[in-house]
Amino acid sequence: MIKKNFINIQFLSFVSVGLSAAIIHWSARLILNLYYDFILSVIVSYFLALFYAFCLNFIFVFKNKKNKIIKIFKYIFINLFFFPIVFLSSINLNILFLNLNLSYHSEVAHGLSIMIPAIISFIIYKYNIFIDHER
Image (tube, rainbow, N blue to C red; front, top):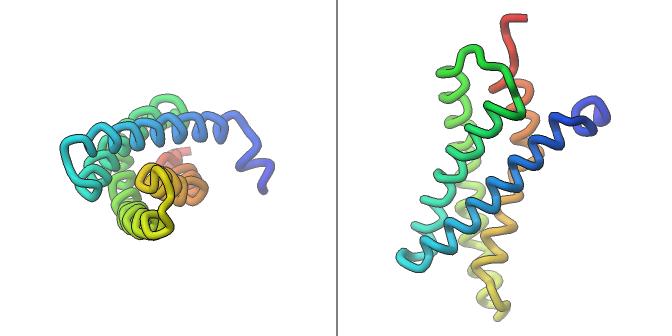
């Protein structure tokens, strides 16, 4: 099962999209943090990266173009579920790293938090959101 699901071109494409979305998420948060506080920057950058990742996953990874509207709503729903996980872990890790006097505490906290839902989201996307129900 692991080889079939995780050692293939689709998974490597998903990881590439995920890495690029994480870079967009992280970079957007850094830029937004110049103008807004950490919390608002995390929120806005999350939704920017969400849109970016959906488009790339839809076009390049899970190439099923049927039921586009349903896929969009499922994708949004799943990522709204993951949002509190990323958001709360960003805040709590930031506080922890700040108390430990770590340099770049907010950057490290946010970067680690972005990675938390990666594998679980691939399984959900592959077998729920982007699955072809009309086979």
